[in-house]
Image 1 (cartoon, protein in one colour):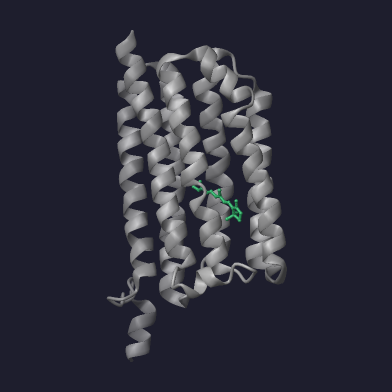
Image 2: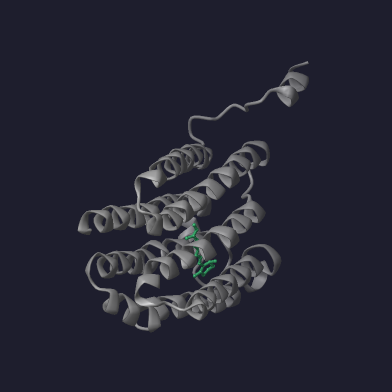
Length: 243
Ligand SMILES: *C/C=C(C)/C=C/C=C(C)/C=C/C1=C(C)CCCC1(C)C
């Protein structure tokens, strides 16, 4: 009887020491709240900035839906929801690349820049998935390839064409670009740490230090998805004032 009730109940119990489940739950809520905030603020901006704010909202909304499933998956199986995690990333990280393009459009950014960033991000994520889910025995190797693609993105935005366009645009676009660059360099670096905590390799010490991969990923997502969106929001506010 109890099992039957458990199987039809909509919520599962959460243990007080289930900090992984807790971060999935809070992450889900935070992504939902952020989406509502971005979507509802859209109409107060100039047309030129609405697409950027819309994309910020889409990023957190897509994450909210995935967090809903990941929270559930964790509650049901006490196992990393690796598949949902990577589907989420493969949708949202390219959208973050689109954000770079959108804010640099004022300086004449070309679509080729956007596609280059998207391409590098897909390589980064697909190779990461291989290491985490398919070829776990060679996780270090796949992590390295993924890391190279990551540094390609870092190079493009810090020193490449994106940087030049940001300098040309100047003002609040330049400072927003700079902040986003720091998010990618520092905020995105949280993810390889999670990967090292959750896969076998020469770096095995990390996992045994008690660091949990999902907790690290969940913190990374909250910082990066909501933070990124707020930088764009701040830019839209600044640009609306400048006029
Ligand atoms: C919203 C989700 C974001 C911003 C996800 C970003 C994910 C990464 C930057 C992942 C990077 C990885 C490496 C650089 C090496 C190891 C494998 C990954 C995929 C965890």
